[in-house]
Image 1 (cartoon, one colour):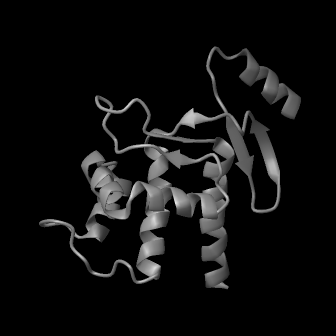
Image 2 (image 1 turned 90 degrees about the vertical axis):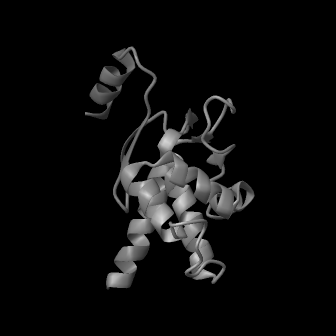
Image 3 (image 1 turned 180 degrees about the vertical axis):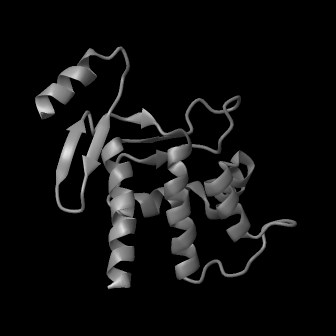
Amino acid sequence: MKEKKKKIIDALPYDISVYISTMDEVLFSWNQDREYESASCIELFILVEYYRQVSEGIISHLYYGIPFSTKDLAVLMITRNDDIATNKLIEFLGIDNINKTTYDLGFLKTRLSSPLDLLKYLKFATTIPYEYAKAYQMILYDNRKECL
């Protein structure tokens, strides 16, 4: 079955990667370590840094400008894919902090390079399918442990 899937994917005229797993096993992968421009996928890692800073007491109920709180910006970034909110969080949290937390969690190929401004910067962020899937897996696993 996996060989059949690989033949189908290989025949496509697109550059794609796939990583599908459960908590315990990899079900299917194809080019899982190929690096891609991440676009909005990097927002997951920005959100991880946001909650790291919240959990360490660096951010509590601070307000960043008027009228949005940092939590409002995080919600807008994730639920509305709001680029302005994303950039304000990047500026507030710091690119270096976001990248350090990402690296410390074991995501060695996921990097935020700049704020989102396609006219100013050539590269925004990169990741690989494996690391993106693993980040969600870590979040789900931690939430599952807390529920038990």
